Image (tube, rainbow, N blue to C red; front, side, top):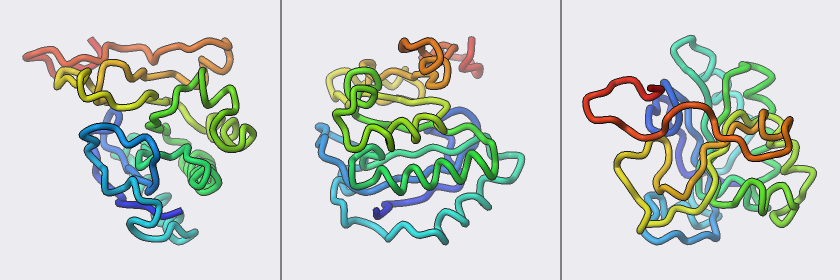
Length: 185
């Protein structure tokens, strides 16, 4: 797997200050994707064990709330093994929350085994706290949405969803309110 960029101080892709990994490779080709250069699986730099070690060190400080994985597409079959390695290492060595962004649908594609290796997907989800699923749809884009680009995308509490065998949104309101600093109102 290659990765496009690592952001060590990201406040756009989940709550708090986060470390974010943008993987390379995506076949969704969403219209007006903000990261279209990462569609190419060969874009960026090779993902190595040294990169994982650096990510873990970057996430350890108390001011870092968690880790986000975006793309490209983390659940492309070519990316699944390395995404599993990194989320496993992050969860086991830092216990910080992990958000993953995917164009695939949690219940209709990922859990049904239509994307890559179902066992690897299930293992990735085991380490994932929140999944933002669904393709970016330009016509549904709104600047009022928090942590997602278009209103069709869901912010799923993965662990509760797995336990209850149904799709459960992460609690909180995911729209910005003018004049409000609190995203959880």
